[in-house]
Length: 375
Image (cartoon, rainbow, N blue to C red):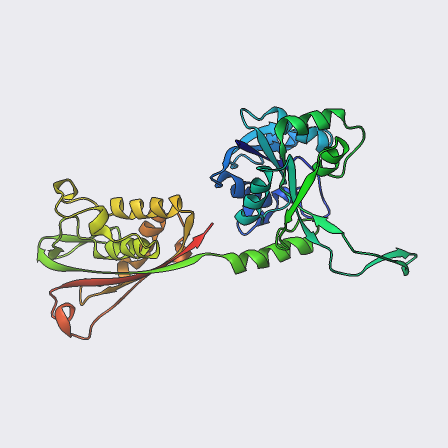
């Protein structure tokens, strides 16, 4: 079974407010559609992801950051789904998902896929638990029996050939793809939905989604510590800044003790060792290497694992040189390498009150803390 995912994002929904359709509104730093798509782009069972957009959105660049096959949709949701089905390359099954559902969990996708192993169609839903009323003129006119009622969600999964034929045969404007499948005689298995798999409809839904995401956030903290001794020289490097000084720092690389501590903090937050493991001092090719190479590697490793570097706090421990005059340039240099705002980088200094090797002026120590946030 080979599975494609189609994310339908061609609607013009405006009830959520804002200057753009709801699927393009920002949610925790990314568009709603981007969050919806990522669940499928990262899923090991999905061989192709297709995002169906309104032609106007494609023309103005919306969705350009989505890692999917982008195609234009039709005048109706059904027409957009058909366009997506026609764009599938070699899959046997397909999952149809609303771009306005940004919080679909991997477990829910897994359950639909598993059901497709024995069913022609499957879709998640949650049982209706609240009392249901029918109202007229602002008053309750009747009570509706909720027995057997479910709230439908996406993704809705189908055999590709059967769903495509069902859509071509269907007359009218279906509520969803399950409606189309049932009209063609297909049996649809219900899988367990998730109350957090909400559909963004109004402004309150965006606020609720933000709250749910804060509860799901993966935040990592890492600490780094490094020490380098003074040696003969006329300058040293600290946090990416060249500082003229009567002595240098001894090390296999450029001995930037601050940048080393920050780099190790990132590796630590990822639980992926330290600089010595990634850049062994026994390897001559790292002799006199500039330390931004190490920090850039740690940054890319964080990005590869889906993390953003949220903030950095580095303390340099030394009697000299004076750090204050260089602190802003250090913050700027680190921020440029990381690709973040300077406001997220703190560089400060302290002495050890003339105690220990730093107090005796034998070298410099650095301590750093870094926080990573899953994006």
